[in-house]
Image (spheres, rainbow, N blue to C red):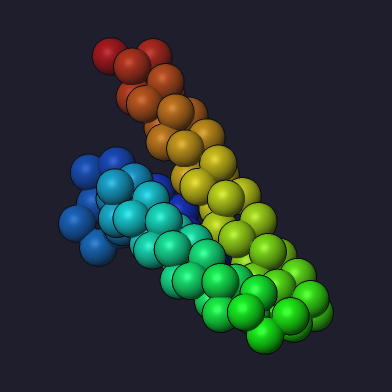
Length: 77
């Protein structure tokens, strides 16, 4: 999931909303991995690990975008 952070715009998701969504995604994937592990489903586990990695990348991108926006807004003052 890729979302852009825009400061001072109501329709744009906030960093907190993006972060919460990604953490929720990770939590669901971890629960799915636990079930797959009980079934010894290595391929299924790898799929969930790839989704977790994607969510973590999304968090890092959102954090970087937030930092850039804050830096940009501070330099405009």
